[in-house]
Length: 393
Image (cartoon, rainbow, N blue to C red; front, top):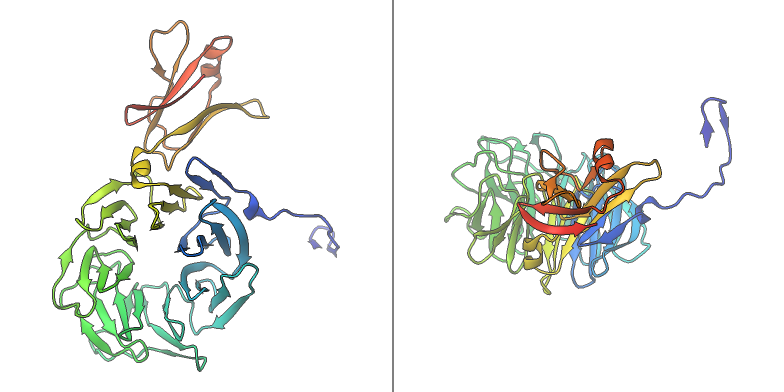
């Protein structure tokens, strides 16, 4: 290590703990010490492979126990991840590289050098297409068999860039689906993934859709609509709000960043609290639902939709810290406006100790509040949307 003050290099033999081991799973919530930005769910092997853009990490999580079992440094600013045939492909937006690594524990991380900084990628194992983060971008094609890369040409003279595109490769038809975002004239297109030739373009543009495109069987989801992937010009069905960012599809549900939809009826069946944005989601064949939020540094697991809908608040606790301060804490998928009430022997009913709803999952106790409770037997209760959820003494 280098000591800049003394201008010396010295040998440091201190031991440093792996920070990713500082995790805890309680009441549906796996708390992490870093934000999780995107992940893929491997149900056959019961694993979640998650990337943290700010920490340059890949976390491997046991989906059964919700335990972080491994972390790997993958490179600068990972922003997208795909799982194919027990191999992970990770776009590194902070460099001109794509990381690849096996799902086997302890596997090395290898790199594919790219012409530009990859932000969004899609692959079938023989080729990779990627897009950069910037607004007006060119798409790129990598042939993994020949280790060659080229920018896709523009055969349509009316379009020489794509605006913040999300991309998806359908290897069965050799189609590259491109869904623009962030523009009032965003287009949905089908390209040849190797040449860039426009195979099909939906004739009407979309206004300011989110940067997301999903595919399942013969259905293509983009801009709140479901298309027939074999003929996107045939018809469209508007299912969701245009600015709902669709993030995952399961046998029963369609997940957006704001809601969960019934896949059969296309109707919303659960809406996340207003301060919560889900960035990745999954549901397995046993009914378990997994959600993550980067702002909470957490991944949540619920045994069923009912458990999620009940939104059980647990473990309301009143804790004294080493510095002498007191704090309320509780566990829940996110804050949606909680209020804490107190009652002691001189009060006939519970009285709110906060003027406004608490959005966070903790509340520090003021000295004035503490003086009211000292020497008394006090009960506290936590309410969400005027429904009593948890109580402590």
